[in-house]
Every structure is written in structure tokens, then in C-alpha cells.
Length: 365
Ligand SMILES: *Cc1c(COP(=O)(O)O)cnc(C)c1O
Image (cartoon, rainbow, N blue to C red):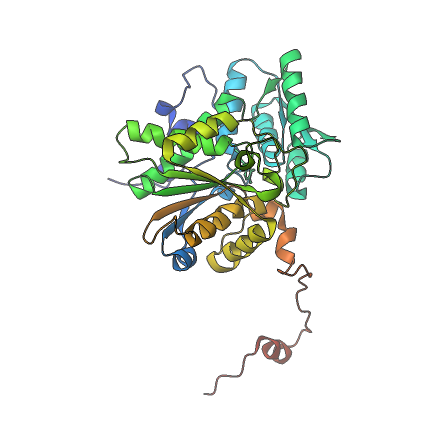
């Protein structure tokens, strides 16, 4: 058998998993080649915990977050149903993704974001992809309420994760993990905002079990930021606060689905303080070599916390989903743990001086 270069081109999740998704010949597939992201062994995290840790790096998707997996499905179905415009509320990544897929399909994306609360990289993406972007003087939960209202009363199609097509597309990430590991992991850890992704992985793994591709369900562990942890606290949080802007959500859209999924997998929801999120963010970038946005690093923080608590034991196979790329919100990399600015050292055009600064001494011959 020959493997030509062309045949190794990943075709996006709707083409790759057409038999496992609700699409037909009539569905115009709108894809930017999303999915097929790497599952990266993380020896530094394995050494810290004794577990076998893998990182599913969703920042490698076309717009830099896992949102693309659901968006290819949502936009394809919207176009199939004749939509000319879509709308979403967003903490940033949904707007970037909706804007890219809508413009690729030749339709309009309108996005509502909380003013001053989304990372500059994401705002730039939505604008670059020609979205009608409105900054709402409220929080994410307000934006979602309005987006739902508009979709009910005007000819625009809602592409938030309350749209079931989004979760369907996102479940494909679980399929990819199973293909690489040959079974489900013992634990799967994800950041939780609206809890759509937690729900999607749970569904993907359940389907793999039914198909006989796995011997078990992984225990699904989801983490929210302490200042924005409605599921952990069991009540809506009116003014959620965290530096992890992608999960600053006080009233999760998929709350009920996520509780059912936790039940089915003997799962867990935990809360992590912002300083622990940033500590994990630095460990992941400086020790593993993977750059993510702060919300994504909560998976790493959750792993360390659960390993410390003795819940994740030695040798357990653990997959961490890191949801979005670090380049979207890079300012955090330029701060030290005590909050001071990191300023790169400036040097003259002088080899000897630079060698001195680097602590190099000449090799003797
Ligand atoms: C959307 C998002 C999340 C939260 O996912 P939910 O499905 O809303 O729980 C986490 N991290 C990043 C980077 C995101 O963009």
C-alpha cells in the first residue's frame, strides 16, 4: 500500500466522521480542516503525578480553539436549512470561529460579546473574518439571553452550544482520543464554561463504548474557576469573575446535560483559584512546551489537584483537553508569578557581550 501525501490530508471532522454524524448528501459541508489535533504525551506532567498524561491540544484547530469542531457542523446545518445569517454570544472563541466559518460559507455572522471582557486576539479574529461584532455592556450570560431572543424573533440562526449541532460536532474529539490510545483513558479532564464540551466528550465516549471501540467510559472531570463556579456551587453566579475569560460564565447553557454526564461516568466538578490556573499555565508552557490560554490551563491545574488528593493514582491514563491557543491572550506570559512584568534583556550587537550574558565560556581547543 502506498500512502501519498494527498491521502494524508485531514479532511475536517464532517468528512472524517460522516457515518457518525447527522449529515446527509444534502448537507453542504463547510470546513476549514478542523479536528485531527495532536494528542501529546506530557512527560513533565507524568513525572509530577505518576500518571500517564496526554494533552489533547485543541489550540491546533483552524481558528485556534475546539469551537471549530462544533462550528463546522452548526454552520453546515444552518446553510443546509437556508440560513443567510447566524448569531452567537461569545466569551471570544465562539465569535472567532462563527465568523470564520460563516464567511467561508458566504453568509453573515453577528456576534455579541461582553464589552471589555474578551481577549484581544479573539476580538481581532472576529473583526478580521468580517463579523458584525457588537460589544454589549453586560456579561456573557446577558449576551446569550439576547442572542436567544433574536434567534426566536428574527431571521437569524443561533450557533451557540445550546444549538445541538455544536455538541454533535465537538464529540469527535473523543473519537480521535480513542483512535490514538486504542481505548478510553481512565480520566478525561476539561475546562468548563457552558459545559458543552464536557457534555460532548461524554457523548463521544459513550458512543465509542456502545460501538465496542472501548472497554469503559473515562471518569469525566470538569473544572471551573473559583470565582465562576456555578456547577460546583449548585447555583447561578450573577457576576462571575476570573482571569480565565473563556470560562467566565455564571449560568451554563448545558448545566443539566453535564450533571447527567457526570452521573454516568462517576465524574467530578471542581473549582480552581486563579493563581493556581496561572501556575499551571506556566508549567504547561515552560515544562511541556504547549502554549494555551489561561482557561485551558485549568485542566492542568485540575490534574495536579486531583493527583495531590490521591484520586488520580499512579499509572492512570489521563487525557487533558487544552481548549484554546496561547497566542489568543498572550499577555499572561509576560508576567511572573508575583505579578511583575517580564522584560527581555537588551544587548548590543556584540558577540562577546552576548556570550557573557548567556554565561557561555569559549570552548578550549
Ligand atoms: C469555550 C471555551 C471553553 C469552555 O467550553 P464550554 O463548552 O463552554 O464548557 C473553555 N476554554 C476555551 C478556550 C473556550 O474557548
